[in-house]
Image 1: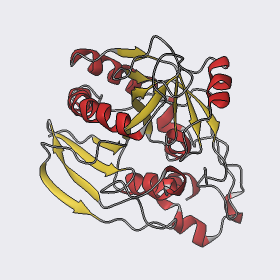
Image 2: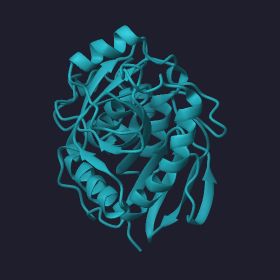
Image 3: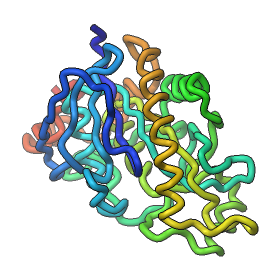
Length: 287
């Protein structure tokens, strides 16, 4: 039995993981409030897996209302070292077709007002985020997607907008001029918080539409998005099952030590309450 523990955050269309053995429902309390739902813990391919539906069961939480800090904190508290985020996105490139899978390696943040750090209330930390996804996990996800027969693009830029509305046509054309590959609403601040928590993070993004920039394709509609998601969710589950078999037992990536030199605040000035609240994240650095 592997001691690895992998988190899977299921986006639109992925609300459960079939095939989990010894499955348990685990509720986690956090200093930041409630996560999106109860965590589902079990084993898949002999690997410990923690699953969370990002939008909650029955998809009841919209992107701007997601408690990203509670979700990532919960994963950290449950001992997760790797997070695979599954997301529905719009394609911003002619070469990325609906149904294709993208493993992005960059993000542009166009969100507003979302809490995006664990470090407030008397503690300051500045992580490096130049390369915002785990290179090892991204490579494994690309190889896994290829192995299960998906059309996969390795790398690319994910533009994260606030939502929940889709883009205007003018916005879509502007974003296209920036050279982005896909557009979504959920991977930021999820990726930022995972890095702060020293959890490896990478995304499986499935294109569901061409946003509204495409001159000959229909404008994005939720009905079409859901239709393609139903097809893509099966591929996502197959890719995840394949990927977790190839994760290394130990991590040598930058994610594993992201906080080593990032905390700026004098340890003596960090309050006991903050130490207690952030123990799963900063504990090894402030004792």
